[in-house]
Length: 195
Image (cartoon, rainbow, N blue to C red; front, side):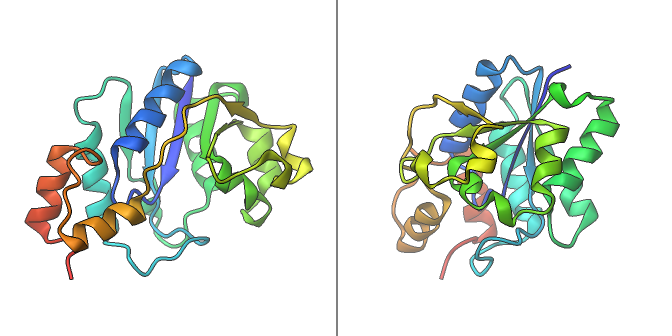
């Protein structure tokens, strides 16, 4: 089995996440890709976040008709800060995987801060790290200790961010090109991101 892990706040999840996940699924011939909703991301601004339960449910709604995708609430069950190494070890044990069967999908912006992560060397040893290109990240700004141990994926660059979507929702702007319709319905129903 070839399993991908695609973690994030998903606050909210959007079509960019979906396209990148589909690209990784096909590029790496994965049998399954898990969206892992972070309970509490230690390295990002948490001030605008809605609850874990809402972010997890929105991610479920986004992928429910997409073959090869599932959503995991392992970090919600664990609570506290969400550390990638803990999830890697959990999924390796759950699915009885060798390191070369598990693929961690991250953005190049995350790789720039990889030295701040818990046990970065262990992550590199216990799975294959695949890095999605981001327009604002240049390879020369990435720590040389990591750059040769990861695989850069040749995805198309996308100019979509969850923070921009949150702002558009607050302004009352249309986000139907950026967010799945079921997710929009959930946001409206739950009055998420409104002033």
